[in-house]
Image (cartoon, rainbow, N blue to C red):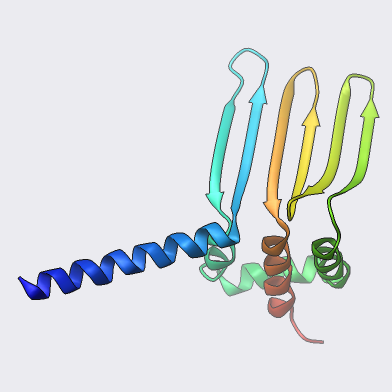
Length: 145
């Protein structure tokens, strides 16, 4: 009985630590609503900590290929993500074209992309630390010249 209690305590502690880590890293939120016949309505929250971990399961040649294609912009993206993290909430860009509207901004340590048009609404929220982690892993996967 004592062994069962220790196992339950260990499992419970592991779950609490995993939950705390997930909350610290934040959530990636994706909302897509298509306003047409048969349109999709996708609303999804994913723990941001999953993305860098999932990248370890991507085949090495695929990451290498992605890094090769993006090698010219990776240093700029890395610096961009790091510097955005230092700034307070900021509106980066707003684009309006007729009835279509897009906004790019940071709020509470997250990059927000909001795109609204008559046919669809797309809203994305990604923690800036996750962007930095992904760019860092791509830089590490880049072939050396």
